[in-house]
Length: 224
Image (tube, rainbow, N blue to C red; front, side, top):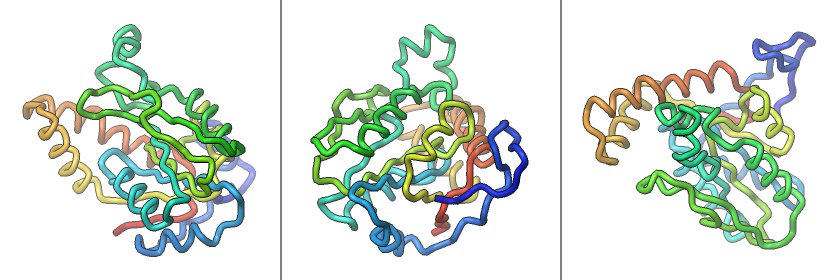
């Protein structure tokens, strides 16, 4: 994991605002970097803004690492829509405050030391709902690929995740690419042009900027 440098507090009050530079590596080399790590169970964070391709890269890594790899998706910890409606947050679903970060933190801490089969929640994008027990982590899993937007965020609650990770990987793509991907995503989900624009310009891209502004540096960064 990247170490924090300096003695000053960050803009969010988190100690050490000045971080070591991330190491840029080819996407094809990620699995090799992961295999170099020591430990019986390793948690690998894959982070990036909405539309960066985190889920795709997580699946790609799991396939490359073989049967001892499993995936845990942050999206499985979306608050349900009834909760969001009750708190006036449905319009910003996907923002940090719309996730159950405490449950995510508890699960990752348990998985770090557990050696039994475990179920994990997933997210059904078509149904716009989480699926309890939609995924699993077998006892034999050595590599847990944890993918999500805010895994390195320095806000309270989120910053407690950082010590759990043995390696972190950031996907860095131009905002124009993210905008195109996100527009296609919401149109494919049946949103009309106005709603697509609202979601992309008022929610997704601002969340991506927040991630860039308020996250720790990752160990590795990929740009391909």
